[in-house]
Length: 340
Ligand code: P6P
Image (cartoon, rainbow, N blue to C red):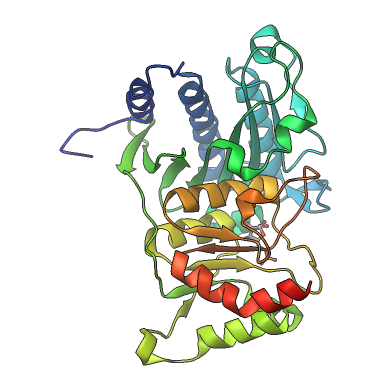
């Protein structure tokens, strides 16, 4: 509620389009389609305990991860809604081996493609912790009128047109970024609309929360272990000690980081030498959002958004969050990264 007036996502995206006379409104329309898919998934998540959608699907994805029933439902929902969109040429999903090119005329002439992690953090579904949908929107590089190609989905994050997430938490929110700003919308169930609740989101330059899976410490590099010790020391001079928070759902951990400040790390370690999180489905979109809000996303050896993808499901290490905290963490790992 801003100045007593509800601004829905539809109204907001239309207002944003009007700021650019040359804008066609296709990107705004695509964002509204994604929001629609989010509402459908939200409904399934919110009533999961009452219908037979909890638990495992009995299959694994290309990542070798056991799929939850809701993973598959969310994936199918997004594929179906975006196939019906007039502004999406095709999709790539963390849950699917290859990209999907929509063959109808409308889609083939659309200028955008969408990548998504349909339900990130799905291992938390059965314990009712926050989970989320993460999406990325790129302008296609392949020829309009023809099916989209893999090259459309292997673009670096610095080519993103927009990225966002829908978090199914204590409330359901959609947060998305364009190069200009980051805005958050809270779903009002009474009218079924996402309404502007967090305009022009900015991440604090500092924070007091570090977020990583401390159970992996034994597998960390010496630099990472040194940084973890730095976080755990009590040092009043620097306004510490830090607190440790870890949900095990990137959307939940990063939404908190965006709001409160802090740092989220999933580094390379002995069992995940390239990191665990997926560049195209998790790291690029979340970094695009955090950097649009004034933060940093880094792999330790390169800015996340500058990494040139070579395969759809590649993984990278990630240090992401408040600018000063990420830069401090990178000081501890840059020598070993330089050593390669
Ligand atoms: P771990 C969820 O499976 C996910 O992809 C991210 O959402 C989350 O941050 C991470 O993996 C959790 O991984 O190894 O700590 O369980």
